[in-house]
Length: 256
Image (cartoon, rainbow, N blue to C red; front, side):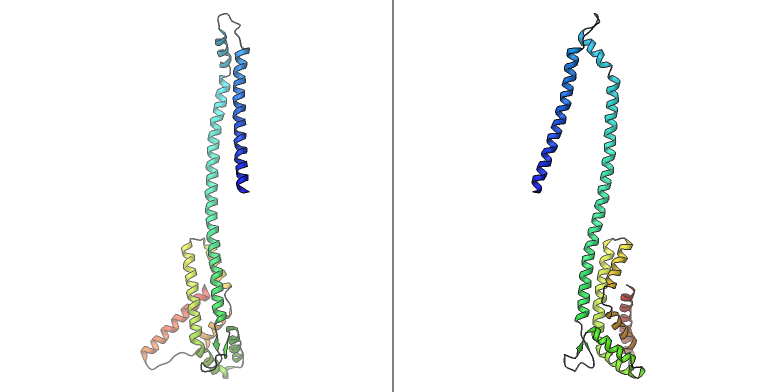
């Protein structure tokens, strides 16, 4: 259907161009015939051909005017084409930018889906790892357990410390995974050449669409987890270094 319309449009343009050409040719032929049959010399010293030449000279100024107008029209057409090309280039740039944003947006929502699935699929222990596997809680449920214990007061802090400590490997693993995803997306944005406003909007979209339970869980981890203490200075130094790395990752996520 599209090819038929295209062929019809091409044929229509060809016929229109041919009609204009025939019209101009007809006018030229009519003018030449009219002068040849109607302009005669009334002066005995001039032939008919010379008289017709003088008749044509009367229109020299008009011919020059039309030639100048045609030249001006050509110049004007060049300027219009130049402006049109500029607009086309600008439209092309905008199209590329829109394509780039759409591509990054698709990647963004795919990344959000993967992160949220990872968070939703994570399971945490209510007491200790030796209990049966059915004693594993989703992130929302384990947070509600932490909240209940926290509301019971300071005397239950040890129990809260214990529950968070046995889940620390899972929490740290989740933190590391999400941190890596955020870093990868930010690196992709840095390489995209987007405007600052668009850059910040995509970053905000990522953070705002992540399951907020993650940040609540991380907050419990760093607020109530017991610090490793050891008489061995090397072990203590390593523990402090690991803690700083974890804090750095959490800060990165919060400030993203």
